[in-house]
Length: 182
Image (cartoon, rainbow, N blue to C red; front, side):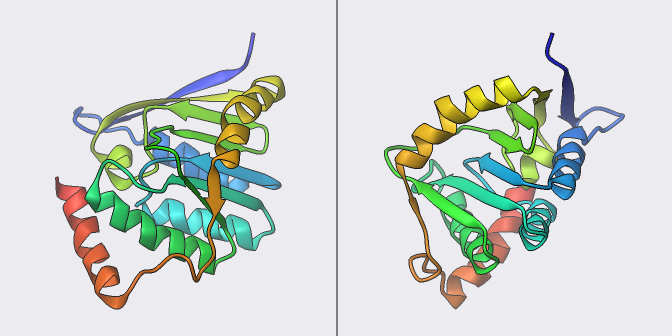
């Protein structure tokens, strides 16, 4: 008896649907208190801007990214995104023990879980399915079982600790293009 909604990305179909990106950005844009997000790959510019704007509105934002991922491409993209977030006051935590491929977001009273990474490919090209659940008990359980544990195994990063040089910034632009097409 918990209210929930199923959202999809179904780009290969003739009637392309991009509900995951639209619903996630809408939820971030409407956030009033807190956003907690875990994802292995962060590369969607619109989502990144929405998260930064939420922080500027006074929303508490925590992002958990694996310290080392399963993709050299995203190891670089995530560093650039982390630096952008940190410059704008977003708390970035690098998960340490191993690669984490969790895709979960808590926004005020919403919990979003599913197959979509917070990246451009999941939002535009892949077949993905997420569920949005509006239930404070469910959200508290997710927070306690997942996020609290991950926070204990992650390091909060500072601007000085995330090294991204000019060459990496240029490479990031090229990598984002490659991510979109491959």
